[in-house]
Length: 230
Image (cartoon, rainbow, N blue to C red):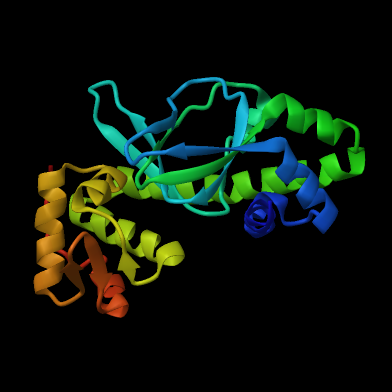
């Protein structure tokens, strides 16, 4: 129970709850364990649960009509999945897949909404946080999509690396395939872009990690990279 409370306390969605309220919400949840590669939910499904990541990493993705995967973002410990679906009751447009072995706290939507409806003031605070978190994420997603639509592949890879460095720091635990999916390009193109950046000294490779060696140089490369058209 202490682990559940600690995770909820670290979650932006539940940041305004008291210790007692955190304990109450924690008791509503059940633990779920997923192996790397398993889906938590698929695209365009109505979610019956609100999920909070306890351990592991989740990628939020959607497939194009041709079957090509596009990663919108990644989620880690403390992040809640399904905020908007909980409020709207509409199908969630993105799918969620475990990148690593992952542990979740699954809170049944009907139980959570019943708990909030009995506490209107608390419900207002939680819903306000949910809309705030969603609004922030939507702003980031829209900016990212605008970059994908207007920039060449090399620039998109650079922007993706810089975006990932905000939550993850200079050591990015992502494969070049995952970077490609988030940059909206092919794996082969992403590999070529990453190799060029490595030769320039902006990044390095260590096992399955991409290391940002010179963030200032990476930022300065926007507008200077050779144009590569897919």
